[in-house]
Figure 1 (tube, rainbow, N blue to C red):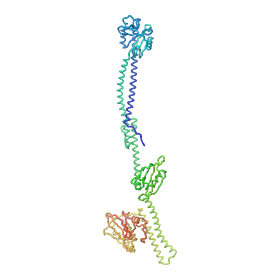
Figure 2 (figure 1 turned 60 degrees about the vertical axis):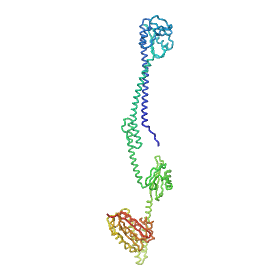
Figure 3 (figure 1 turned 45 degrees about the vertical axis):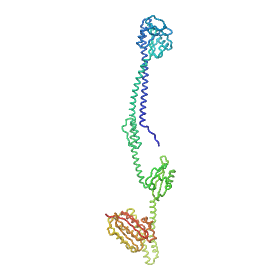
Figure 4 (figure 1 turned 90 degrees about the horizontal axis):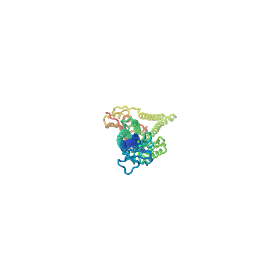
Length: 613
């Protein structure tokens, strides 16, 4: 499943820095524009108010002039112009059209001026101009009507954009006799505005520089913990769950870092517990004697333990699905379970001809859909063999018990019916009954010994022994039977003490079993030899005969309970438990027993005992 790529911390820092700079720039620009607009308006209004006040004072001063003289001389006008730093114009009242005074240069104007000559020497050079432009006429009319007017506009009489102010000149009766107009070009105002702009540009530049420094510092303060949190998160993503974020600020970012630290600790505990459970599960699965394989619904092998590889005799689990020749039945069962979800079991033989029981079950997810299958394999060869041995054991016991019982019954019934009339016949019958009873007793005794030995109820007390005396005693006890069978029975040692660790009674029991078995399969005029010799760390004891030998096919089975070789070769009878008992006894004393045989030559049984120090 794909995942979204997170932004790099450097890009986040750049975005934060740019956003701060943009915000600061917009604020500074707006503040500068607003300051400039307010300053320009204030300067304009202040200049207009100042000019209007000066016009009012000039009008008031004109009222103080001699009666009827409301238009000052050129010298006075120049004084007004110097003091007000503005052009001075006077309006003539009561005329139509409206006329405005123009103070020319000291010399006579070229051509005859409009208006009348005053005859006054101080008024020479004054010209009266007719106000023709509609804006000029409106302005002049308002002043002559008694209004005080100020504005900034383009006037025809000034031929440029100017700041002007006008005030009426009243006589003593309050009648408008004239009007004064002060006109000041906006050049000075523009120069002042330009200076203000330069000052604002300087202030804005300094402010932007400080804003950049402050934004960089603020971005570093904001981005640094984010970078550390991001780095810690990436390390956790790579498996370093113990990662911690130090030196967190006391804000929302710090709370995020503390939450990540807490989550990391809890995640570490959860993963540690999961790993423990996984290790336990791995230990259990790997220690199972049953083979286990898990496959998902994409036919990918999720898990397979060592027992599975041992039972299937594969070096890799993936080869199971490729080898349809050997595992075709198993693969077909897995496919049926994957499609239908029903559990199923089959038995099949592996390449070593061991019988394997395979049981497959479906694995489902939370929604109930089949997500895979699990197959459990178990080697049932031994259990089948044990079951077969159990059946054979019951059959053999039944057969061995039935044989003497049948003989006893065959003798008892004629005695009850009185079929035997002579004493010799009845004694023969009693002798057969006694013989079968002894056989039955021997069988039951051997079965009880076998059961006690297998259950561990018989404990063997070990002690240091010397074997020559034990061998001689066993030979003496079996000598009458050997003589009756016409077999030469003798003991053979190398003359040493042959010291060993064991139990005398149990060693004698094993020797008697082996001698009896050898006498049973050795023909008349044959020989049976009981021998002992020292090894490096143990003593070898055995019985060798010159009998008929054992077929190779029978050798692996002769130590099994109730197993008997072909009786047609020798007319012997027995329970088939002797060799099984002998092997159990030898193993209880810490040794082992082996057999070598050649048909027509003889057989040799050898067992080992620990050498005494």
